[in-house]
Length: 123
Image (cartoon, rainbow, N blue to C red):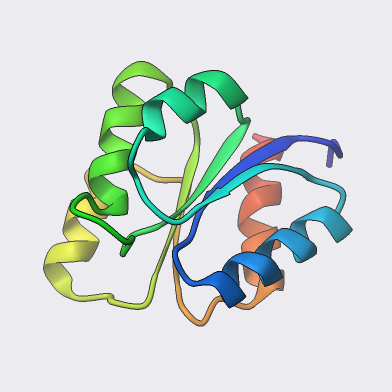
């Protein structure tokens, strides 16, 4: 695994966001941002140039993580790992249409997330 890869995270729950950031840093990744909303997602991706996006499906605000990911993917073909605590059928189908690298259910244990990240970077 190549360390130092840039990961941008969208997570609206502060305690989860903090834990995610700490775990990613300890695993050797560069966290180029943790965002709670999808507002200005495209501009932030353009500025930060992440290698991977970890996207919570349920975010604060009017736009959910799936819509934000769709907008990002129209411009930047980046791998996206979705995380959700709301795995209802309609939500999962919407997410799957974007062909994410993975969809993980919350609570997400870091070893499962790390495995998904390593699969992205090894392909």
